[in-house]
Length: 484
Ligand code: HEM
View 1 (cartoon, rainbow, N blue to C red):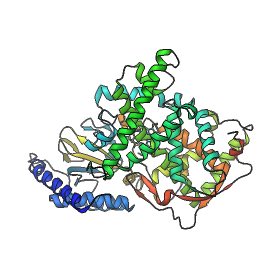
View 2: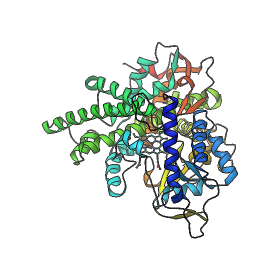
View 3: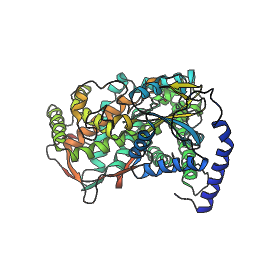
View 4: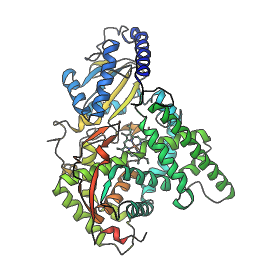
């Protein structure tokens, strides 16, 4: 943390005073209705709970931290997080309630909104949310994603040829972050390496800085993580504004059509520039690290599970054998990658990129005999269900075949659920499969000496050293079909 002790002390004092002011409201009478068990604690205890969870996230013990809490208080409990009374819900029926109840709304924090924009999709509600989500879905639905396979194939081959071929050791996470960022920019926002190479590189740098501040203490000073993140956000927004301007001119000249890319579509639908920027920023935040994390951890799990690795290799080589030299993957090839996708789902089960999900109660609402008062935050954590032995047998074992059978509803929630469920799940599936095809058929890998595959959460899972692997090219691999 880039802050000195006096700033920390001042911050602690501000939080303490705010919580003291809030306390009478939190403790108001609830007509005898039963609040969840647990502890809202004294202000100091609330701060400790938040600090405890933050520390556990950084040390990769957050699952154990939440598990201890749930074991002590049960599937519905209360605690104080980030200064707010919070109901913590665990299990499939809690997930169903969390994703389905109209009394709970998705609400982001003021600090998130300052970074991503006040009209980012997570903050929008009602018709505003439906309108913007529909525009995004137009470009993320299965039919649209099918048409992106060739473009994704080109980006993956270009990236691996440039960044992996000829190298002995790779830091996987940064490599996959830049690959998935470039795929999103080309496929969704219509940027090209030839015309927008510099803008894409600059945007990527700003986003990496921005994402570092997502859970940072919101102190806006030039030397704090949060301050640097806000500055990166301002620079990123200026780049997106220039792209919108360019797209408007092209649309005006008839040089592009609203169906070409999401920015052109939003302009044609009459969305204001600031709203388009907020939407682009939300998509970049939502899509940037999540798929990169999936691919990185899949590579890590396949290294440690040779049976699963052998099955993935067999499946991908079968696909590669059916292709002519230089021929791109097709939608039919993606449909033939079922085992690889099961291995990816198993990875998402064990290391869900989105660790916790928060909503806010807009009314008093009851769950499982407990009152969740209006104004409280409500939190779920996918891992609490994914690692529950009552839901997934032997939950710590990497076993892709468990996805051969239907999974009970609300048990696998890596993509969330209900009206807010991740609209990018098909997009993520296809880009992960295309990337895995060329990695598996183009290279053998093993974790580098001294790299144990451990990771921490910031809040997205970050493997130590980005997951260092030693690679060896495979002579007959799919990457050699590459002409780039
Ligand atoms: C493995 C990759 C990914 C995972 C695990 C993931 C997970 C999630 C989760 C858990 C949510 C919250 C859902 C809820 O509240 O019910 C979400 C929301 C969202 N995701 Fe993803 N995501 C991934 C990739 C992507 C990609 C590639 C895109 C776009 C290209 C995307 C776009 C979005 C958007 C726009 C939302 C906000 C939806 C709304 O509030 O209506 N995601 N994602």
